[in-house]
Image (cartoon, rainbow, N blue to C red; front, side):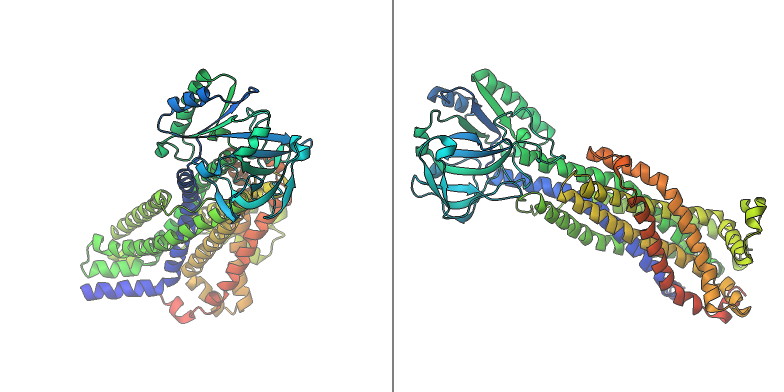
Length: 613
């Protein structure tokens, strides 16, 4: 009996290999997308946390607003507040160059720098008092080249020229879209989602030896504090925010004439964590849509596969196999497909997270990637799909094995044709040719299949349109950044791939279930073009109806994504995007139908017509 069981198992896999592969790709695309989008936020946060620790980034920057700077007693008071912290004291000024650009100068002790340790990108640190290092150039900061002489006489009012000896990347200024001059109004840190084009930005940043500060009217006006416990940061968590708020108040109560800046006031840190949160929010919203489409199609595939296997189930029951033993064959089929797809999705998700991290480099000088891997999104998504698939397979299987073998051996009678609603509209119905009348009747005869196809296509359309709307917002709405644009492109690609697999799977099932019907048409003399058109018309009608229902679903999904992003409106989406999305879905539909043409015209008429005899 075991030998017979294994033979039937092997034949089932061979017969339904296309469905098996379709299930694998469905699971792979959905789980890879969800886990990749979801884990990318954790990857960014962990990398930022590692960077914070390795560069000993300051938790507090204390600026003196008095004309004398900080006294020795003031500095001692700060050290008393943070006895185990690293404390650096320097002099810093922002000098206005024009209406919206400033030059920031730091006068630091390079030999004893312990906080906000920069990365030396090029050249060397100053070896004499007339040398300086400059922050690296970005989209706004012009930057200097090694060996360039900078005349500061007009800027600071003193006859001073310095030579740039090196280029550094500061751990406090890694946003590439401009760093605000926060000394002028530090209570107004610009919103990271609207860019920096309308704010007073730094044109350049220079770090000079502290000995030059003696020529300035104010010195030691800038204190950087990095607390000892580096584990409290955790990418600007709520707990870290509470910690900094309490200690900021203590600093203000201890010192007079000061302004305290935390990392929540730092543009680069705030921007990166803000964008990471937006990506995570997009992941949560789209996770539901991807899961629903995937589960819907996977369940449809398995329930309809079991339905086709009625004669095989009857034979196994006749041979004495238990219901559990028979059903285990289909459970194994579904489990193997989801597990294989899930295994591929694990690596696909890791690759997608790395890609998203790379895309962020267009907006930020990203810190080194953390080696830590987060699999929460992956485990949750795959577990839900496996549980839903196996449960539906088992329920369908037990429902079928409850029938008597004699009933299972008889083919299910075809659904009786019923009048459709269009027949009640004579001026439309009477103008339709016979082939279109039969197509419409066939589409609506199996209502559950029709609804399942329409819902799947509607969700697929909404995913494509959501990605296009987000892409349109970044391109033409001047919102977001290159990184968000990259996320939008990823959504469009994965939604398109999912749409292709959905349409392919459902169309392939439709063809497999109607082999006898197609063979009958061939026997009656229908040509290949007519036979394929008979099937294609139904596919296109289902797709078009799915697209129509996809529009209201799209508006809801776009609204949710824009709400999570914190910017953008439905009215701001360009009109042509609403036309591109259905075009993409229809294009994939055309490609799928062309792919399946061979399967239709190569159907064996003899085997199909006597299959149930």
